[in-house]
Image (cartoon, rainbow, N blue to C red; front, side):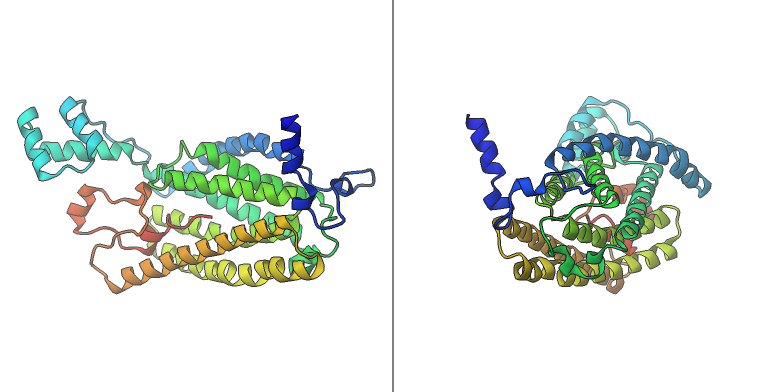
Length: 375
């Protein structure tokens, strides 16, 4: 009884639907018309396994040979010998202080240079190889570019793609085409695949923040599906997909040491980010959900919730763009000085050995920013 009551409260028509609309109005009937059904959100769970399998095949059969062709090494780092005193110290701090090194010298009869080398080897064991970074970036580029092209192809002839007011004409009785259905299913499945593949990918310092981000994205897509905000949802997806593959292309260029191409691609990424996420997103999507929807459909509770999420997303867009501008300005205005990444990740850290040999870290724009931007 309690479970039934909770179910009725969660799926309350008062919350989800405009006035004079019931769930029965959105039931699928004969005639070829399809309305989103919550039960079909299980489909992306199965698709996620397929997406992950395609990813591993792509990385192994396509990305890796390309990386080898461009001279990316696929060797494994040297394994640091098991020394209990050093292992215990490493668990506490990966970069030992002078006091720690002196204490370890007495415990192990090793020289300072030998201890520093052991810690460096230990840190390198935890860093992904250049090949792993390249193959992961290649897969993300392939997926983001492919899903963007597919999304544009699916939406090109849809009335709401060019006129956002069509997102609300006749709402919520919007039937979905097969193309739009699979566009949504594939997008959700991709984020489900990221949820479990994240534990095997390049480990980043913002691991749990990214995990929370993927959870929030899945919840937002699922919510828009259940409330049939799919038309405006496809606009949000398309706008976001237009950006990400530029960043992954820049990272790929960096890994194969095409630095000039990398900088050009990153510059394009910054421009596209600004146009899509800070211009088109608020003026096309948010304007439609805040004003056109109220004008045509009228207010209802789930719309306020949806708009609140969109506002949070806009704030994140502005914050991440400020990181791009801040770091880019810092790097360009302080050439030759070491610059700290605002939100660094293990993927792009410079090893102590490289820093000592070169005098400073890599100051390319992508090194400091390309992992600070998430979808």
